[in-house]
Amino acid sequence: MKRFTETDKWRDPWFRKLPPKFKMGYLFLLDNADNAGVWQPDYELAEFQIGESLDWMEFEKAMGDRLLVLEGSGKWHLTRFIKFQFGELNPECKPHQQVIRLLAAHQIERVSKGYPKGIHTLKDKDKDKDKDQDQDKDTAPSARELEAESVWALYPKKKGKKDAMREILEAIRTVGIERIRERVQAYAAAVSRWPEDERKYVPDPVRWFKRGNYDDDPETWQRKSANGVPQLEARFDIF
Image (cartoon, rainbow, N blue to C red; front, top):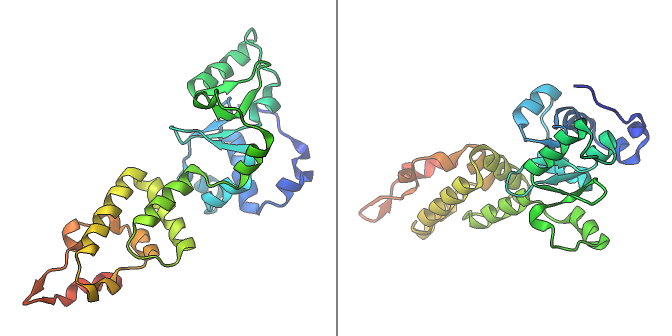
């Protein structure tokens, strides 16, 4: 599929300051988004093609208002893509008709002149977003970050938040937010029933999420005792 490319991007201060891996990530998105500028995240494929691992949370922040995570689907929308590739969309133009159908399928609203708003879905059409609010959005937490924060709040040990958030985000991408929340809640409930002196053996969240302990048998989270003395083998899960 042939597309226009912006040769001036190499002189754009925003693009110039991106780390090399993020530059490759951005070029990958431009080539792999559909004709509405929407990409279904496939981090494994992207990293295979780029040849590097990316911190996707940091990449999402670096994109700023050039990227919108669509509510509900989690797909990524390159907000400036259509305007650059097609200009004003014309319903009478056959190539544009496909783009218009894709926008409808993705529930992305278009302004009256035909350009995609790029910062709204259909659910937002009754909201009035002024420029100050748009600027605030650049520094506001993403939907994924808010999900990770909710999981962090549930985990029974608070240590190494920055690294833990990275592992929590990866766990959410792997098995989904609902399962992660459910398992962390169950683990926290189990820990709350441990003897007080056993709770110091709760693993650091980085280690727990990185090892995928959320998939452990919940029975292993219980602390059984004989004559009131906790079993020592229950402590080995910290290593």
